[in-house]
Image (tube, one colour):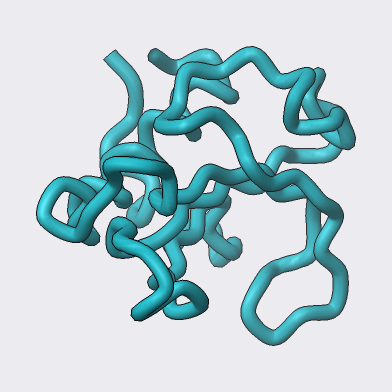
Length: 118
């Protein structure tokens, strides 16, 4: 159960809204350690029970646990809101396992968990 990639992109495009998910390529640790392709983030809507909570207090099952939670305002790369996310720079992570598709799938999984769709 849950909502898939195409469903999310289509729904938000039709509504003329910014997507509530974001994946970002990991460039900060290249050469430093092995890691996956990137990180995944989900924007939590104002009024949602997890909005503004510390990421440690959000009970989701996502790779490596949540490692980010913050309000983002006035950014060229992010839409305004409260975002939480995970990374693929844990021990044992690598680009063979954590491809762009795997990061995207895990981000959709996180979206579904936060919004009770899984």
